[in-house]
Image (cartoon, rainbow, N blue to C red; front, side, top):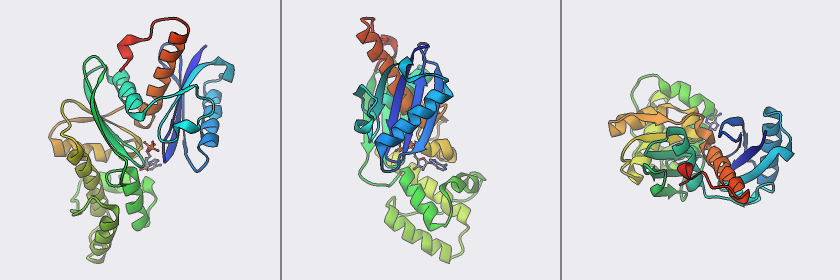
Length: 270
Ligand code: ADP
């Protein structure tokens, strides 16, 4: 079995996906990126190879993406996150789609046309508003692990209105809500609404919307709130945190086939 590897080194989490010749996913691994991106990517690869019962020699190509992509020593090339998320999501849905990716430190909106090509994109990497980092800060302020947010927010209920996307102002506002005895569940839903408000402010989100990234992987209520907000269904991609790594693995296959002299998989290229 020949495999290709996609390594998505995010500012928060590193994801590695191994894909076979038929584009089937044979392994997926996620680890906190930590401070040594090269070592984390290597640890993810070792674990992914074990999951697939494969040897390193079976890898035909590796493409790295994400914030720390230049640190992946075993990658032969790099590709942007915009390209990889768009390609990975189009591969999964095979339709024109607007991808909303919410990561640990950034968020992006990518529109893909019927031919799989990117029509436009917007990306925010300048501030924590509307990202996983915002939710992590709120969880810290509430004395909760981030993994508790979804359970507390998912029941139907009211949401407090946070008047600013800004993490610093939101944290101050939360203190005053706590002082007034507002239930924590309403504060967390308010934080989810704030993430959604930031996304909607970034882009009009035309067409079918599919969400990716670690935030919706762990907090699907964020997608439900976005659906309410835009008045249309919002889907969550399968294995949403791995869509960028999947896209990178598909680019690796395109590269491997091209260097073999075969035609690239044009139907799936962006
Ligand atoms: P990046 O690629 O920018 O590193 P990801 O798309 O991997 O980001 O998403 C990371 C985000 O996912 C974190 O900031 C956090 O909000 C969320 N997340 C990751 N793991 C968990 C968890 N166990 N519980 C709750 N949220 C999580």
